[in-house]
Amino acid sequence: MKTRIAFAAAALLLSSLACGEKTYSLRFVCESTGGAECPPGDECPVVPEGSSACGDLPGVLGHPPIPIEMARPVGCQARLPYGNPYYGDSQVTCTCTSTAWFCGI
Image 1: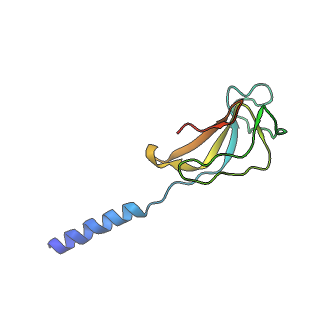
Image 2: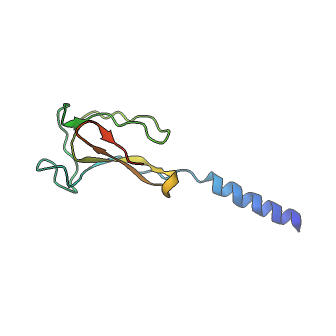
């Protein structure tokens, strides 16, 4: 009986460790600070690279940086394709500020 309980406990532990991170779609969504060119809730427009735009996304939580082909405007929120394991695997987000992407984890 003790052997069965030990096997059951080991199986339960291994199955919980086998669960991987959630995956999400990479999306770019306008926040309320996006201005007229980026209305809240809309998909962020592509803009020329410059001081009022953000390019490649930084690496977060051990994930590599994400290269993007087109820049996004200030006020755009990038919804990254992975979750934060320290907060219930909720989707990680970064916001384009006037200087760079800010990823509040």
